[in-house]
Length: 307
Image 1: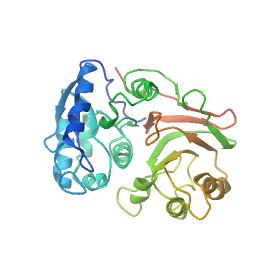
Image 2: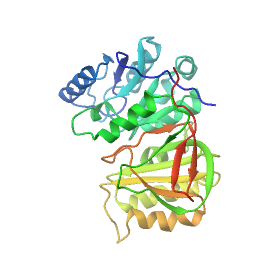
Image 3: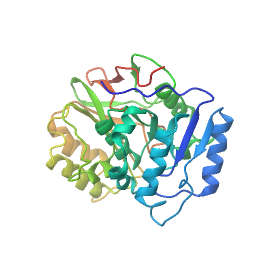
């Protein structure tokens, strides 16, 4: 059973880090004020405001910020400012045994999902594909905040992962399976292949989403995962949206799901609103879930935080 990090409560301290691409300091400060207005204390990493081109700082410096938050006993949650690119670079510099001994809530999406999966895989920690610091603003819908706090601030034995009212999940291949959740952003998933940080999908329920990629790139990535055997031993597949993704050669994202994933015969659900989409369902990486595509439900079967 994966480790549940301690529950997030009002007045707790949240550690802010930039683990991939940089974010404008004005935006960081605005979002921090939102957290403070919500009743949280905030501590900011040494390199959170740094700018070094594509990435905020060196891999070692970004990893240092993350580990500093791990070692800080007052920090209950580590919240990256954004994803972007380059998060994979920090993985060789993390102390996974220390992370295992000092479990924290870690939330994010986009390129952060490679970190979420590896923290589960190497440190046995439940992590959360959910909000980033950039999302703590008035434009984020209540649904996304409710999902975030349901996952990180509530101890429940089961929790249905549901879309907002009026937006249906779609079950394409019937089945009923259980297993830990893995996955996240498709680009980051593919970027782990052939590295020591390749995501293990055997016996798992795979969740995938993407943003701003044309369908010919999605085709390339999905076929690469298929050829790498990532769907061979998985339990089931849940496809999120491809947000702002363009159609190439008259072939849409849905066409690719039907053409590439449907023939695999695995229980298959689509249209989960999460991560880059406007609505962001909170998906706990490493938590055991039940995927029932006979009844069109996706349910977390264990608490994802502990008191």
